[in-house]
Length: 188
Image 1 (cartoon, one colour):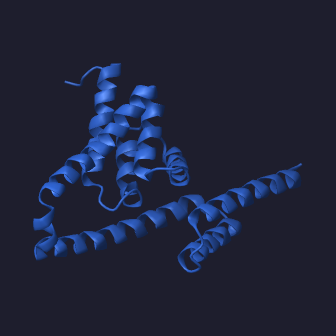
Image 2 (spheres, rainbow, N blue to C red):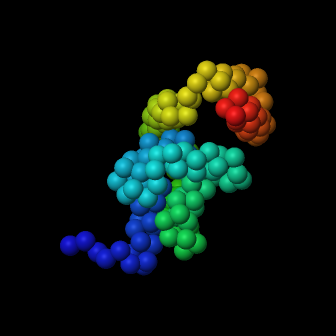
């Protein structure tokens, strides 16, 4: 039997959904994008894929951790301020629990070869998830040659020239705004 959609039930659902996401999201915000899309857009229908990408972009360009910022935005959209708190707490609870457990056994983990090898395997899986997310992002956001050039330019400046991502995000926002106004004049 499905529980009624009361405000309290929605807050519990937000908390438990983000707790689940936070529990299995190794590698930070980028690696969890596929799971966010599946849970929040496909299963729950709380946000569209476009909204999620917007929240993700805002989460990237605001102070703090992308995953927590995104959880806060989705929670707020779904259930206001209480929803933002529930989603944020759900996202951070697994990390707090894991950190406390690891801190309790830190000396043992540092010397354990099996743990070191397992973490190397997790890093490889995270790299694959990141590539998958980048591919999906590019397919949804790069819509013309200008977008492709901007994407390539951002990749080169951050990846090879070591320019801070903050400067790249601000520059891309300015270029996007400029392109909007230039296109608007041609349409008139």
